Image 1: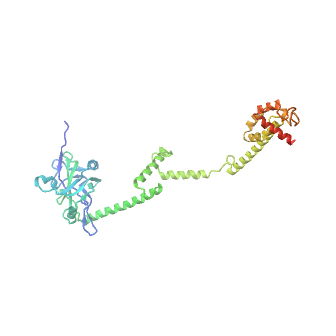
Image 2 (image 1 turned 120 degrees about the vertical axis):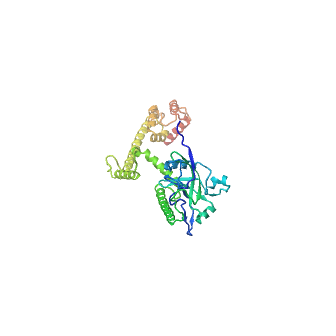
Image 3 (image 1 turned 90 degrees about the vertical axis):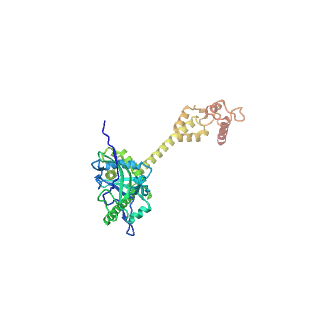
Length: 381
């Protein structure tokens, strides 16, 4: 059977460093309690009274602290800081266990220890600390009796009798100075962050009011685009070097001499195209004119069709050519009429001859229109 490692309950006072309560002088020179208090130091530690008796020491490091942080952060109920551990002894003593503060978060500072954060002090507790009536914090925790590793945090107490020697007096000016210096560093860091955000907003073309989340989202888009580009194969990426390379590439391309044998100015090309189009129109007009005149001469076109034929040839010379080729020549209509301009014998009213009616049928011309055309020609003659 594997050996079990039972837990032990301890009521030690912790935090052997200057910022145990992290009090800071207020504007009137009085001490005010901080919302970040140290619960225990980093590494191995023991109590003044010799505890633990069933373990070599108590112990906490970053890995252990992370487990405690996860457990506390998953809770919805706040943990209490009472007075002198009255919560533990209230059932026996009958003394009412009054809260001095409430808290719901933990924070690990490497090399320093574990801190309760977001501590919300009651007005009474704040008054006690301001009056220098209480100075220290003592946690209640469970630990492994074999290794001494801290397993869980139960609560904490505001006390004047800590079980770990070396706790700093919160009224000590050195401690206050250290805390004030810490705040000064934090203020400087916040200033740097503000400057950094301002520059990132400018670089990413974001509005002045863009949040940190907006900046991160835009940076992620930029990162994805760069990873999808030629730089994706590189083990590391430098945006400065990438932009410098792109600028050099553009500058080199702008200095390349243009080969006049391969490239011409737009103006010159446009002039040549205009001249070519003009020449094409002239050639096409000459071809249309020759085709129309020939068709009129041998009767494949009637004078009434000349304007239509020229329009068709200007738009589609192939279509006009096809029409003229398929039309049947009629010498009777070439250069005049079969009767020399006179009405056929016996017609009286200028009736069309059989040949003329055949032409109308072939050309799709109404006989009346053809008669009108002949009448106009006779009158002109």
